[in-house]
Length: 92
Image (cartoon, rainbow, N blue to C red; front, top):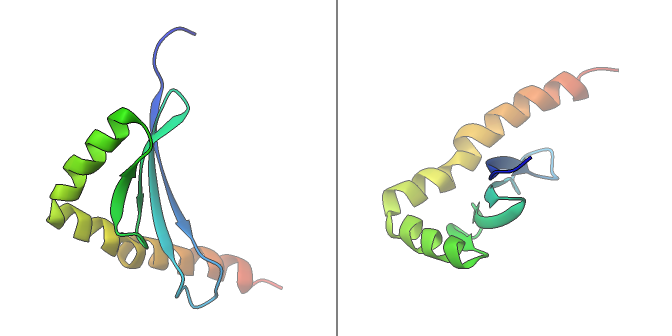
């Protein structure tokens, strides 16, 4: 299997039932190495490789995009977590 493998993974992480600690994480990986990650509690992109640092700097300059990513914990994560949790918690 020659070639390159690039993927993005988004996670919504929380441990409380009121979702007050909800964190939105988006990781960008290349050949199984995380290059770049957005963390809504940090509020910016962080690069972990030379290329990732360059991309993080570029993404972090776009404040409109950063605000959109920060808001994703409330606009995407929480509503979906409420739906999925109710499907599990409401069952006896």
